Image (cartoon, rainbow, N blue to C red; front, side, top):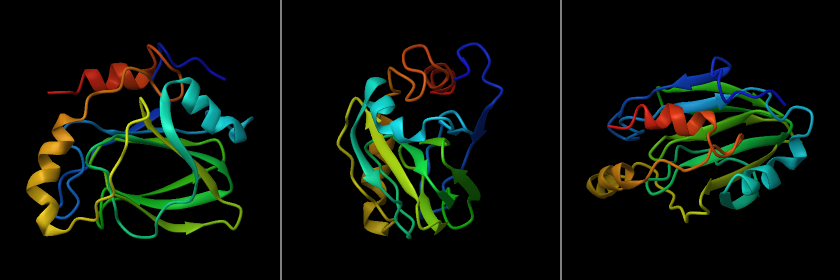
Length: 175
């Protein structure tokens, strides 16, 4: 595995605006780590847990737009591929395959568009936080906008642990 602690050029960063339904995060970008666990994708869940991202699960991704207003989320593809749309209906379509990892700041919408039959993904949350699932209902809006702002920047990067790229990239963006 490459050490990205000093060089973050291989991490893709994507920022999404509030679209009136899906709030996305007002300050923090989505981070995409392509192929970081390509050689051992099935170890993703244990690696996430080792890096203090817990309350983990292995399954798929919902086929409807949703987000978590009270927790950041990491998704690590363990097998197969998935095509997601991130950021809401007018967001960005992203192709992820075995070994890829995406970190979604609180409020970031995501939806599965397509997946291979063998698709499996591990999900986890910093410090093992509990999470909610929101779908953009108008009555959720005032509460979720405040909740998103209250979610702290994690103390560790889900892939590289303490001092990893996420902590530095997100701390520099937090207002």
